[in-house]
Image 1 (cartoon, rainbow, N blue to C red):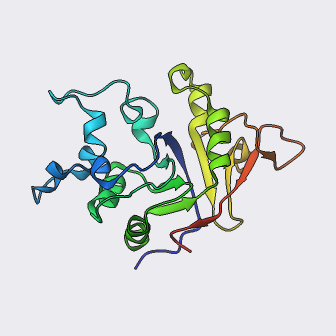
Image 2 (tube, rainbow, N blue to C red):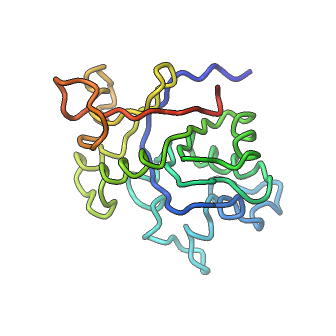
Length: 203
């Protein structure tokens, strides 16, 4: 039995483009073997060249996003065929939460059944997150890479970026994003920002 979902923190990778379908998430070629590594096949057409080498420009092939636990996407994520393997691929890669303005209905249901948190955020929130995090290519220092960390809290429910984890005394030292145009949650910390989380697949 799945444990009730409370909150979730992790490195957040941004994947751009509306209507990313399940064939893009896990191409059909990866479904032909009972022993396929769906995590390795996640976004395979974008992650690998025809020769099988990694595409260095794709976000999940770059640090710190190789260790992403959260995916921030655009509208109608998971459309197309009903293949449940799209959810399995995300989870086997290590993604535990996908945030987007909208999801295809069947993908959303598959996420619920399999324990993948699918969180609805407004298009304005996606735009503000993009503005806050800047360009992946300029994230070279550890301080800059820490801005990739998000905290999803269903109890409030909100999406948080900033130094909140430091105030809670997290042992891993990941600080969260340090800037963003969203509403500041605490006047004593100009580096803490909060966006509304509209709904999740765990509700």
